[in-house]
Image (cartoon, rainbow, N blue to C red; front, side, top):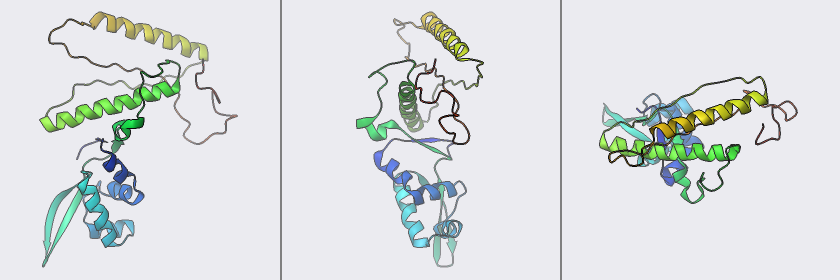
Amino acid sequence: MLDIAVIEEPAAAESSLDPIRSRILAALAEPGSAAMLAGRLGLPRQKVNYHLKELERHGLVELAEERRKGNVTERVYRATAASYVISPSALAAVSPDPARSPDQLSARWLLALGARLVQEVGSLLTGAARAGQRVASFGVDAEVRFASAADRAAFAEELSQAVAGLVGRYHDESAPQGRRHRVVVGLHQIPDPQPATDSHRPDAGQENPR
């Protein structure tokens, strides 16, 4: 089982979003048959079996083993991944394009960058899986608490300069064996763990707080 899988096909995305099928996917973190899942989820076995076949058809679950019980063969399934992400390629006609309106201070542009990241890395993972290879990548995740909006703006400026300096130092357009890589750096508030009213939410009503 993969840690995470990217869903790229529209039909597979639609299948995964069905409430019953999403429950089945979650339950199949541990392998189970239609009868076992029916007991876990409180659903008729025939209904579970139908949804299992649909999930299998879209590659979201797979056969783990077959067990003989008297004259009956029990099919045991498992999810193909512990979690799933739907790629914007599943909605290709309306997927966000960061090149359309680049704006470093726009939360929506940051979201478009994130969507492109999911789409491109998902495509790389799909191709690498078929070739039995690994994807060369690198990620950094950090939290920082700013004392003021001015400190946040100063941090963003220094970060931009540092990234620009590194890109300028290592970018080689003429390298014959070079491979293009994308660097994405984002900064955003961490959402409150519980819903908060606008009057108590930091930067309420501002998309581009300074």
